[in-house]
Image 1: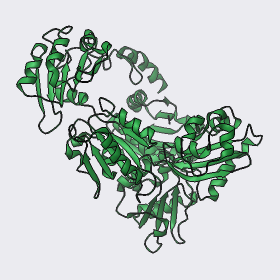
Image 2: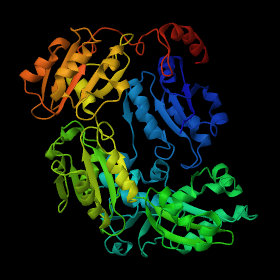
Image 3: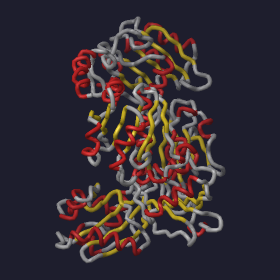
Image 4: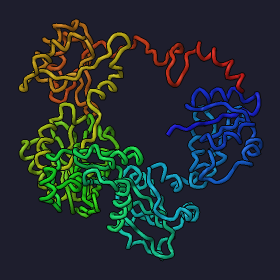
Length: 612
């Protein structure tokens, strides 16, 4: 969310600091100290440049409540200290203080206890992660007091998203993760923090802070243009509450023939919900617990609401089966997007296709590593992926190389684990979408209606640029990178023959072609000069990495003499080791969104001074 920030230079001495902040903070404006009262309810934050006493006296008449007050930060006139004064958490003064201190290279002064102790700021989690609060908000201060004083706290997480990943990764030592509300013992815990879409109540004697993660997908069916459509939204929520589920929908889904319904327009316009539509053919392919012949007769599919909920959630688990209202039906599914495996091994399986990166285990993505740590089965491309990448597997996980398996054998193994409700990681080298051979696997998953997702990885061509210490795009000389391979056993399309691609003389990264390097060199020499720089990069980022530089006329000799094989990236182009050419991005004469050119800055400096 963009914030409107008012900057106040109390005296002439603060002009320079004010000007620096104006240039670097979007949506900031200069105001006079006498305008504070007029602007109090119209801006998100104030930055005072001057003495703390003046700042405090200026804002004192207008302070109401931490839930309403804007953030206030005070900076000394030399820009040495930035101090969070008011509304540190909810208003965002602590974050703004950090931003200001980075701009000015100042010392940030933050005094809220949770920040000083490295604890969660409980009163910011709702806004930060988009979690409505289901418990009594009047108890928030008591919950915060208990938490920052490290009183024993239980944490119950019953659905996962980015926010719960954060809580688990930063869990303080006085917080215990529990798996069921029945474990919330008031003799052990003073406070329970709940992140759940389900209705839960803490035992008597415990403080409760209940956040609702918006992880649900509602599938719905409608009668034709019902007159009471304005009541349906609340009726669905009440029906789900009877099933023990709180309002938690991030998306609504239905059949495409309902796209022009007034209820759909209301969801979008009044409630700002995403609405996704499916065809009858797509819906009819989904197995559901309560199919209806009547529905099939009217719209061509035995299920609308349940099938739409499952499809819209990416194959999620049906939490609320079909419920009926006067003119509607609805169902709710939840996809544990960040944690697709189910801890008890029951329910639906899930497959995550993960990019392993170029080889070094430290270069897999944070998310990719999390997936490996949770997997029940890791099926990795053993001919291209170092086994060390799988060393983080959990106890009891099955780790299997696919190097000696054909496609049918791989798919059969994954299907066996999937049907047992397991979480499967299919680990491919680099980024799986670049020469990853995942298309045929996805075709199998689609045919078998198996839920899956792709986590991207760092491709070896990016590792090549890093290890060569080269920028593959040179201003005004080459602005294109071609990712391709030579023609081996798999034919290349005629229009993508290497000599045709070489006509642009762009930076070319050639995969999987060491074995046919003579043909590669011959085709490239048809367009590139023979002294064009080349690099043959073997096992990029692996412990036995080797890189050989040369020129194009010697490429085949380099590969043959050094016995380079399958996992060799060939890079061709004048970008290798180039240090010529300047980008306009950092030119002092170049204006962009975050910086004015030197001439423009000088022209406006006098105007800014007048405002001060």
